[in-house]
Image (cartoon, rainbow, N blue to C red; front, side, top):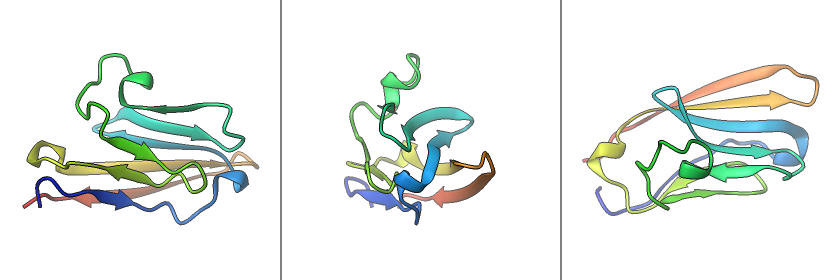
Length: 99
């Protein structure tokens, strides 16, 4: 429902990953490195992206993404890309629908 928060869970811990990246429509909206040397959300990740305006929260232990004060315009496909320490990659897609 509009105005609520939604959390997209990675089900991993960052210390076991090289990097975790979140995308909407192929635009990177959040990223965290396993050693926490690099963390970004929204405009910090992509200067032309102000869609979320400080409404993204990234869990530093898991890389899970929380969208606060969610809006109808936030509906869509969110892609999680995880790069493991051994350089293998995995991808998970979340479909977010706001009613």
